[in-house]
Length: 251
Image (cartoon, rainbow, N blue to C red; front, top):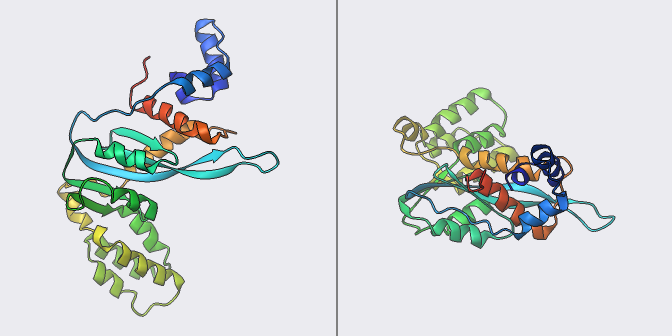
């Protein structure tokens, strides 16, 4: 099972035969994975930090149509526990809410609406401490282009959570990118904090790197060369990969 969680079923077949001398066909490997009930772990500690992001999985299409990509959602609890869900946002919400969530609960994410639509279902509104990922904020800032001096000044102000002062730097600027960025700041104003203080005092994380790392680690299995998945098997392959990453598969 650990081999199937890390590499293609075909490679797992080869590895098992090399290690044990017993041939277990790749179709049998797949059947074993599909028959398992992989449970997500309950955290051993109270959860004070949750990060959410989306990944991509390639689905097998109809004959003569070809494959296509779809989104799945991943959550990371306390930077430790992994959970991934395809076409099942409610399952992700239920998993988070089944944990012992502290007050405040830090919720980290980028600017994608799909992320924050999930986050707003975690715990109580008064309990959540929603923080916009600093690195995505800076990435969006530099999409504006133009004067590097102005961009650096805006970055310094945003690092200190001074949204209005940062916006003022673009008052006389025109163009679609400037307009989009100012709208982005307005939309996420409540999630833009004094990142400098939070980092210096180690209040909490200021980026969603933990969940982005999780997506990369999940991707090493679901995005192996040539991999295409049937819709009905996606959640199971996500589950076996998360079970491995959570240390739940026996050696």
